[in-house]
Image (tube, rainbow, N blue to C red; front, side, top):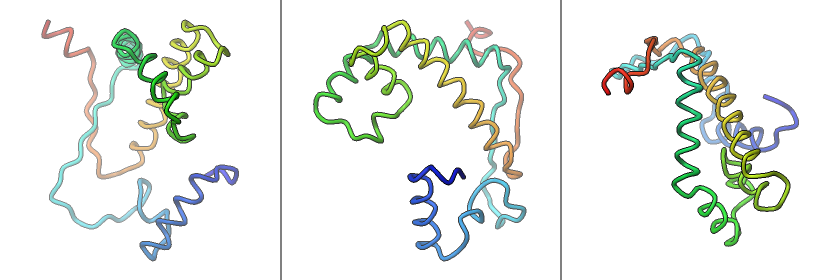
Length: 143
């Protein structure tokens, strides 16, 4: 955890004080977990397929009115934390004249790809998760 990330430090303290044990004892990377009847699975996508799916999803969100959604929420006083959400931050930058819409969309796609990589890296450390590799896009195969 970065010492300059105040939000994460506060959350770690809340978890520790509320649960009475070390923050690191809660998440992936822990060697011993209590037995569970739940089977945890995750899909590992081919990086190119995942990138295409992310790009398609972001473009669909923009076409479905993401900019208008953010404009309305921003006008009503979006919280600073919510304003940092993927897609929202980039659209706010566009609305405030810092970027073009094309730049905002491209940045949203890039940040979402980076987030997906970080998520996979995080979950990969959890020994309870059983991973399955997806070679092709199943939606394309069915269609």
